Amino acid sequence: MLSQFLFILILLIPCYFVNKFLQNKIQPRKSGRRFLGYLLSVFALVFIYTFLIVRIALYLFPFQ
Image (cartoon, rainbow, N blue to C red):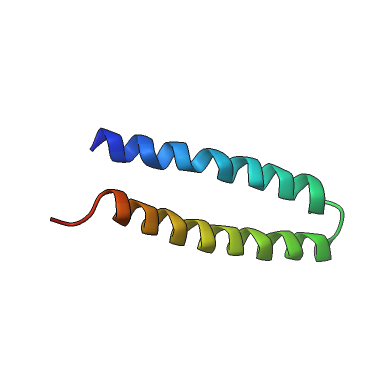
């Protein structure tokens, strides 16, 4: 149980830095169009990252 929790926490670290990169690159506070672009890119990031975490978790911690 603890190893799975630590696994998820460790995998969230790159997501944090990708989000910071997107904020610096897109600068969503400057206009509504930039905000929508940032919002769409974050939705894509969440979808892709969730998919990858689930696939990796199922590979490392298979059902028994």
